[in-house]
Image (cartoon, rainbow, N blue to C red; front, side, top):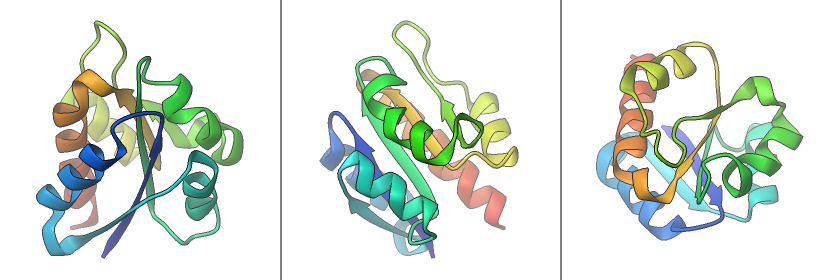
Length: 122
């Protein structure tokens, strides 16, 4: 079971539902405040943090970067720069555990993130 926490500034319900839809019985998802979500990953109560905001890095990842370090975080999309599957696959392979993206890229970003994590766990 891969444990996701959803933080970020916007669309938490949408992000959580998409993770559940894609991961099915292989995932659990909890929605938390940014600090609670980042702490859950830091303390081993969750495996991955995901969050959306308007910029992909600010409100989505600020607390995760502060608590988990920038080396464990990846911004997978920004305004005008949609996510790329190869970038997400590399980030997961490199050990990133927190992912931020813009709210207009939720579907692609979550699809790439969840699929990459599931593939990496095989």
